[in-house]
Length: 252
Image (cartoon, rainbow, N blue to C red; front, top):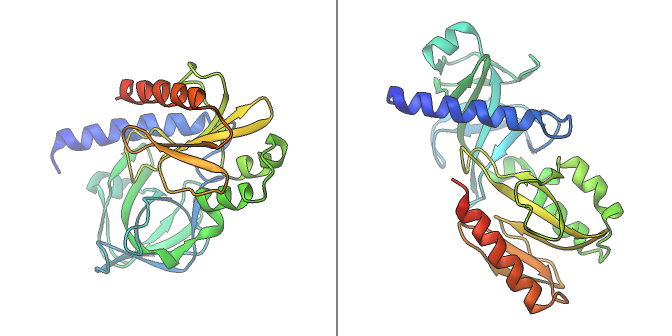
């Protein structure tokens, strides 16, 4: 890895950490997807084992492809690991609070570092994900109940760390969002943004597949989608698509 690439990743990681610290008083350790473990994490699909993670460890994930998923995890680093930009084999892994979360089996390259926090990525099988912490599946289950009131959705929003979205103020709806995973984009935009008209959900922007009866999905730019209630007028849908596409195209 070139020095310029390392510097770019470290800068992006620093910005990413600052963003997360602003999320309604919650940290990365409070919200997100989790491992169904213990789980082996590999260098590639069905490849060599790099490290193992204990049950319940908080992770970042990519979309599942052919039953495999790329994951990322934040770890606390020792000074020699920071200097080497690498973890040696047979060493314990600790989260940012110093709690043991797993161990290395082979040497592991560190993707990004900010102060004493490192970020590493690799692959695991979909069976090693605790799907109770998947925000798309949880949203589908919730909406299939047919109740779209904000008060009904608030426990879900708290569990996954949704916060008010203030970047795109061109829409008339109140927005709450979670970021896309660092695994997908080092400078992530939204993964899911919920749209409320007063206290009623009318739709949501999303990057991953979500299918709910009574909602129609429309393609947007840069891999995003808009799913809205089928009762929403064509004019409102057109306006939502145009404004959000313009917003996504304006973001680096």
